[in-house]
Length: 378
Image (cartoon, rainbow, N blue to C red):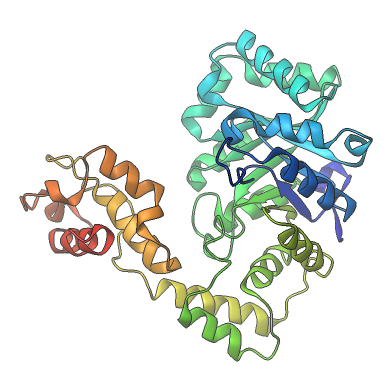
């Protein structure tokens, strides 16, 4: 296992951090998580050299912290650092934050949390957290030794990331980043901004929830043609670890074989490891993915609100994602939500308001028809 210095914190961490959000339930379907299997996987990772454990109050219907706490008995707690998070949607005062924090300590069976994060910030949530005194609460927890580092995770646009990062004395930040998301959310600019401040960056969605782990045919052809043979998973993680700003890459694993593969990969990666030819390959891979884009919708939302309730940018995003990553639309949660809210393309009456407002001059009406047929067969 390769270890990396976490920026200005000066501490070492395994490059591979175990994400505890995606553990499967038992085959019987009796619960949301197969507790004994999850504990075995966690300990397998730690025995292999993993020192960073990532969880959150809300993960796996609020059971993830409890299972991690059980896994860290028998001396395992002393081998790792724990990252967990306070959920913005469940706290409205300092008293409620204190209640959540105490419950997290109890579930994790520990007297302190190493990395404590304000969860899934954007500017609106950050302002809410400030209003209820979260920065002062985090300062007090750190002074008391109940947390070691003040952190946040982020899912908004770069401009909001820059504002939040500069607005408080953060110790670490967690962002979504991968070779497809260089200009999405915090993106490369956000990664580099944090790095310039010495703030270590922990990466989530390094494989886009597994979508980059299985390449479509045109992408796989590029991998196959390259002189060095690696799996899509290894290419994705290798690309991330090439960046010196990256401290830890999170990966969720459901099988022992996945733990073993990650341990092998993260025993070979370090900053600056990729050659110019390898970096060019990944640029070509990105272009190959993007060539599968169905429609050039940027999600600007100038077309919204639709007078008939159609979620135009949401439908186009699902359409593009399904094509880009060769996934099953029937399993797409965003599409299920669009259907459940009756905001599908079937509501379109071809009024043309969206096309008049679109700065990309897209043929939205025809695009909606094609997208909905591809996604639902209707």
